[in-house]
Image 1 (cartoon, rainbow, N blue to C red):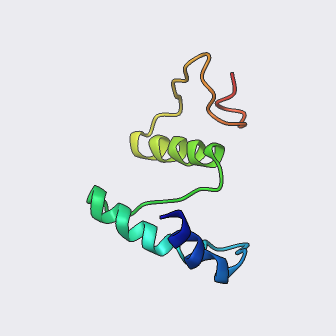
Image 2 (image 1 turned 45 degrees about the horizontal axis):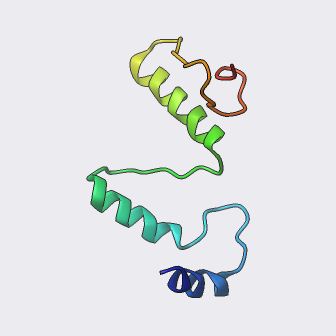
Length: 81
């Protein structure tokens, strides 16, 4: 499986900016497995947490969030312990 992935990605080289073309296949697989219309990828766990907090605030209209002490939620002011 790793060799197949390498064979697919290696000719494309490094992609800076937009997502790597292989991501489209991963999106299709995740959508099929989850039944969701949209999925998103982030460059780091911090970015993923930032987006999750923004989405939660938008959909709940609540300004505050709960964070658990002793857990790492990224290097971002609102979630740092």
